[in-house]
Length: 228
Length: 240
Image 1 (cartoon, each protein chain N blue to C red):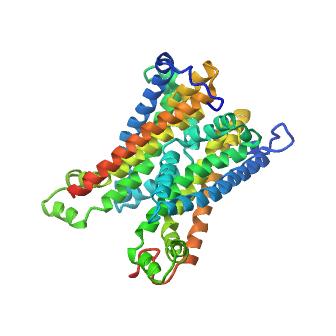
Image 2: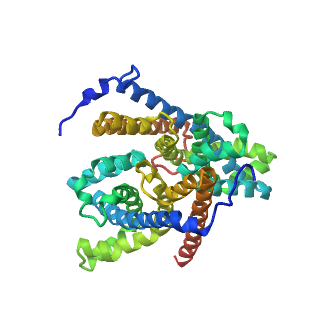
Image 3: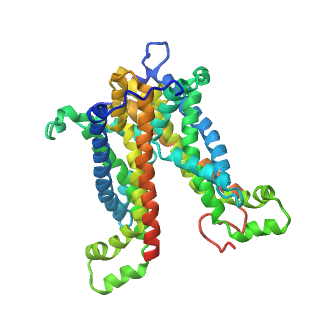
């Protein structure tokens, strides 16, 4: 078919080369999502605090990260994280690129998640905050028990969409040679002498995963909309 | 740690300084991003419009497939597909230079996102606008040309701004197929000079400056295109 030969594909190849890569891609996505939302929420709270000392660094961080390509941030992090740090991480010396990628993605995605959380917090009516204050809640209680749960819920579809984009972006760890899903396919392609077919298969796998996820998010969005 | 900015004045081995190389690379980045932008906006506007056509279910389906296909595959993988797979499957593409293939990859990828924005922009218009066109006896094409699209484009200017900035940043993936743009320069110059921090810092600043410039250009266009009394930038005033 069009000069392609997919007969080299078998389960052995998949389990040997691709599954490990897929596992890292998924790990990276999950860790970066959780870490990114945590730090992102913190950044959002700093930006909304009304305190200049907190607002300014958070604003600079978020806008700075958002005006630079992810590939450059990946390269920066790989360059800057000192070598001794890896020796404290399990099997760190052999997985420098992978650990560096995890740090990068948490730091980078925090900026994007913080914008989403900021919009979410601002979407909560002021009355909710006042009600919390009227009940004698402290700032922390008010945020934790009243504002953030609602903000998080309102923004859930956007957060998940960002996670799908994040999953796609994990392929950029190519720049530092970390072993992710794409790398799994390219390695297999090289070994079997079928690089083009391997790229095509990688595209199919990414497409199936991302399409299924975005379809799920769409369904979820419809359900949340009804509940409201 | 000490700075060593003099590194940019060193010869890179081919008779030009690293500074000149970086400026050439900046030019490539802007060329890739600019050409892709033209492709992305043309195709994105077309596909986004097709998705809203009232009586053409097949065109709506076609553009739906287009959007899902190009936005659910990572950009880097799409670049590889254009660069390695397409020329192998269709030998006619073997003569096409790598720059053009990367422009296709970036342009098609971004066109899916712009198509979604165009669709949202058109659907955000009150239905009455379309009916008004019909009542005037316009054909569908005329309704789009004179009534819907001019308004929709003003609505989507803000998201189009950030998508254009994204496109500029995304052009960095061209490094993967050895286009001599900024990220490629950063990686190679870092290796050759071992002054990674200076090199990366300069490249990062150039990216930020370019993105900011795109932002300014668009907000200028937004101001110029504004129709008094209609979509109000900045959120003051009543609108309609």
